[in-house]
Length: 294
Ligand code: HPA
Image (tube, rainbow, N blue to C red; front, side):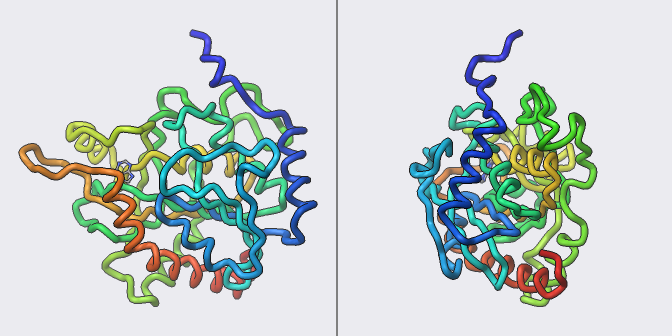
């Protein structure tokens, strides 16, 4: 079957270049690190020093955000002494964007000179050891849309970004994962900090109970609707990747309960625990900077 026209829509190398060059012309910052903030987690951008802020609407070729809780701003500056670009408001497949649009910013970060990408998201906790407000360092992912052939890297491959068949067995940087766990323990987060597998689904509906049980049996610890497309494109172009999930709700695994996930609950839990995550990211950046890792 032919893909729908919207799925085919992709950017030329020149369009990526045009956007990156426009940004480089409009700020003196030269970020070595990019951060994508998930639902309710955009507060990190408020800690950026010497900020230069662009609304997505003002950046040539940049997609526009449609979800409540996603601001739609690109913030350049420094965090814990590291030159950063922070994306406040990401794009999701469920908004109806063509695949290449969701991941457009990642290639821009690469062309801006960033070498590391940190992704954050809100996620449902499948692992019964996880509580609302806990943080999960992403060890690995399961790409459910990808298993069905929906992948931002499908279609013609542009070698200027990366190879046709990129490996994903080392998607989440081991050194940064281990450093995050150490830093988290030092901050006293011990029991509420985990390392686990993130599973992405297409959304926008939350999962059925049968789906949650299925995902749990597959080995997923947390479930969400984002992040993986950006990680695939980032690894394709050689960025080092690291990510956190904030557990905003416990996935419903039992019949006969009245619990059900909703977006307001996700945003509320995000707000409450965001400060904890922001502290962890700042401490991690300081450590990375100290060790010359960024
Ligand atoms: N499922 C999918 N996405 C989510 C969830 C969830 O339970 N919580 C936050 N994002």
